[in-house]
Length: 349
Image (cartoon, rainbow, N blue to C red; front, side, top):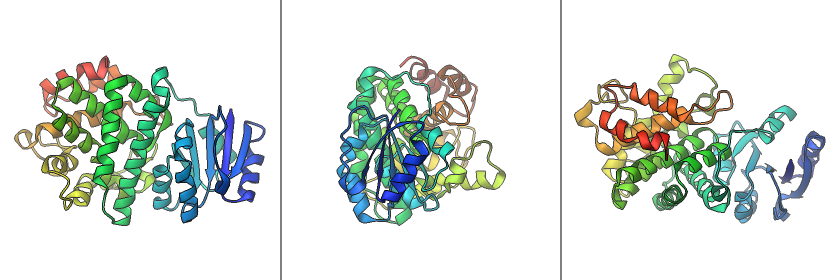
């Protein structure tokens, strides 16, 4: 494996070289001089203090080159949620602490995720859309954490790019690309957006409604910005207190967006109510069928399906057929005709 090291400190680079030189073919450069121009780079490891404005500026200057590298591992202050969000906004596919163990770093570098990515989508088009989408989602999270205004136009452009990519290359290739190159909440939001877009395309919704769908999908989990990563990325079942905290995210997301005049009521409703069920057993407001609009119903199905098929390091990817069976089994909770219409999206597109 060809690994390129980039750091803001020569001592950090030497330590990384000592850690990896027996396992990988290495090249390296200081961040201030970084060009990342070498061909055939399989992964880049970036060790930099993201609290330093000059480091962020330097990384933005090589963002186009970074986007072409399949794995982009950032080593940063893991105790700072803002540093983690900043890393994803700059294009990280994985984030580790600034002092990872050899095994932690090698596990990320040598991660062999299942891949069925078509050649077309492994090029800059599809991967670039996923890169831009993840950066946009990270930017939203950063705005929530920093209590600054969310850039709605940035989200619209990123969502449109995802929609165009799914329309051109198909859902299957989008799912494979995202699962291979992204992780955690960012992977989930990208999967949900792709699935929601494809569901809308399969239903033949007009462009205006398609935009509402992908905007709702991009925003739907923004409330998770305030939930600790140790809970969001926990391998295994959450305890009662952790589950209660996670279930605050729809209201938190709604509150983060409700005063923004550029976001319409339908999108706000979808953000707040994408965990509601027709039988009133969902949260946060225990709504029943007549109170749940179509856009929210579509997003709920897409969200559940994406959660079932996403990649997690501690469990195998669920086959799409099995995920659809689970949706079919949610009788009374999901709209049966919509679940039927989702069959093609789930199994063949």
